[in-house]
Image 1 (cartoon, rainbow, N blue to C red):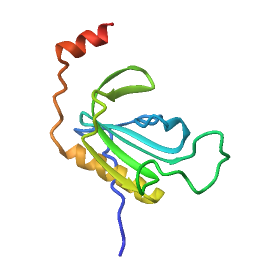
Image 2 (spheres, rainbow, N blue to C red):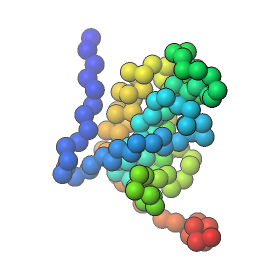
Image 3 (cartoon, rainbow, N blue to C red):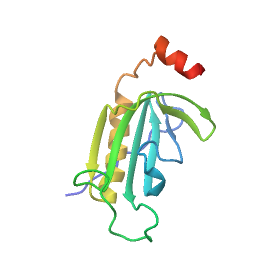
Image 4 (tube, rainbow, N blue to C red):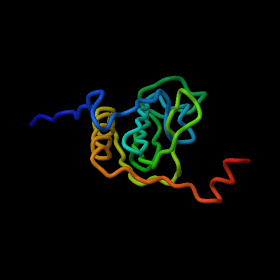
Length: 138
């Protein structure tokens, strides 16, 4: 049995992915050795793993980041960010989808599969409420 890895869409196609070089979620993400963070079609797909809180030396038996998993993918609705390094950020930190993994290959494939899934979905309409708009002005 063979498995295929989903491919990112070609540049110039209707829905392009934006790869961002930082972790997209998790308060301890600075201690994760693995992260993928992709904007696609109005969503942020963020995968992190290999959590090794400081000051422990690098090792191969990573801490769990949730029950029974050492890697996870979360999906959030997105809005434009203010920094060049992160042109898209989560508009709401309540995840709308998630998966957990115990293997780096599963995590990589799972991230790409979720990107493909959210490429095919209708883009969310992200509307700021008056309260949210006031909060951003402060």
